[in-house]
Length: 215
Picture (cartoon, rainbow, N blue to C red):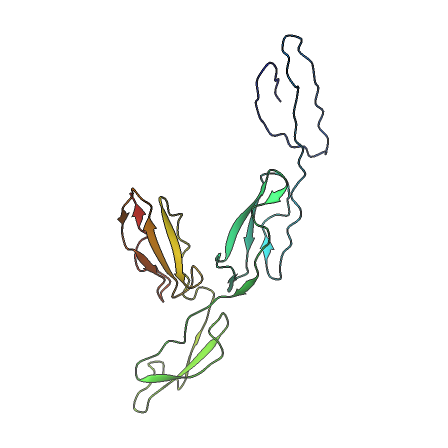
């Protein structure tokens, strides 16, 4: 893999699938030094998955990337959205100490309708159902006496924002991607903001503005 001699201090990583590495040491009479130094590290431990959480791979070797996901209709309670990556680092440590739980996606408060009202609503999370009726003298275009809306998989979820360079992004309200989420953006000294100072996740699953930049 490499031949190191003299005063060189090259650092490189070697991985082995057989749990064995052979290293040959050969002294050099022309150089007086302390010698060789090597660090050994084991694989990362197996990730402990809460209920409903799935992993893209069970591999635990160094530099492994694992996509951690919630099933459709659920998101992470930590505000990480529906999926995120964890990496096995040198030293046998994951980039996350523990994985968060999955919770039903929040669909916002039951919306109001013109010339009608919500008769009932089971809840405002994934799987919830709201039933509507019209006021006297009005009717639904479908001809139905009662109409329903369902809190579905894609209800009021905005796409995850890109990394924000040269500034700080602060979550003011919400879970990070759900309806009503508000982010505030501030630039670091020496930079100026180009774009809106705040972003709101709207009911249609779109951000109120494009993410600003610090230039």
